[in-house]
Image (cartoon, rainbow, N blue to C red; front, side):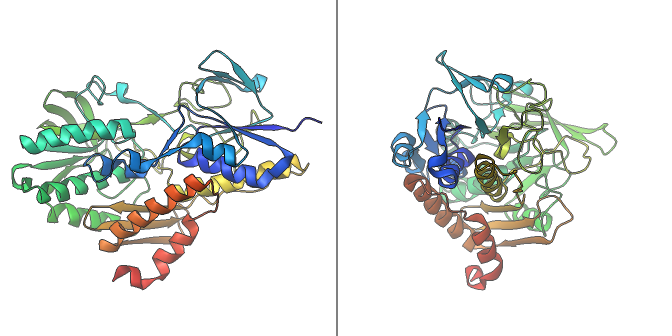
Length: 426
């Protein structure tokens, strides 16, 4: 009897780990194959460091084919053109197709730079740290800023859902500019659709509002909240500050010599517009078992999953999908696939907790939300130089884990360490 085929679509932070954990869960009872856009894994949390040349691209890359082969996982780097869930088929970019018994979608997002005129590094006027390619372009632009100092604007646009890297990058820029002795010639403004600093798409975690506002004051970083980016032009950002009733409270023309703005996310083109599979933004609809109800042999995890925003805000603000949440989605899917292949019902549920290490170069902020969506059982945040050191350790651990093809969960253990080991704060 032919073994069922499980296809994992995507090989990023969630997809790569999902392939390892699913293969470990199903063993020889099923085949596992990964479809990736390219053959390289990049550790996305390190992109802010690449953008100021604290890391090289090579240092955060892993070549996936030999790792997958060692684990008995099939791999194709040609990428998916279109998913056809009614036919259990994926159309690939080279014109061929693959049929599957089970599909796990872990594509990450499509970066919606086109939704704001002039946004983005390719044909636009602003930089990005969402992809290592972008981070390398940003590093070149940053060197040009240091050679000819001027104003900086950093932040995120309306509809964005991943705010941690924007805060990280603002602080990292401040740290590196001081090291290069030009901070005094670089005024900085942070713009965000969040209703307040430290909201993070989560209505805050612990005292993230107080801590991040204090950091901004100490570092002479001004901010504009409830910000809607109208357009970016060469050297000028057009921003509307929106009141609670949706009216424009103030308009700002912010000059910049360098700007990094995180875009809104949407589902990738391969899945967008498939009725019953995605919401209007192209994110995958899943139930409590990470399973699509229209196509029950399709699972999804990570940034591509649809999660409604937390409450109403004057400017659209999305909900982040952090590593802790993604890891728990991976484990739930692996357990459910093993159960289904054994002829049992899929019952495992992800915990949807959040943990974040936001590195500032010379310090940082950590927060834990259990569950991510309030009200919470744990609502914890802390700051200190130890966060920077913890982020370095986490980078080394996670890259090593991918290079070895290991699936062992890590975030929950790290959360317990962060809350319980006081020595980390010393």
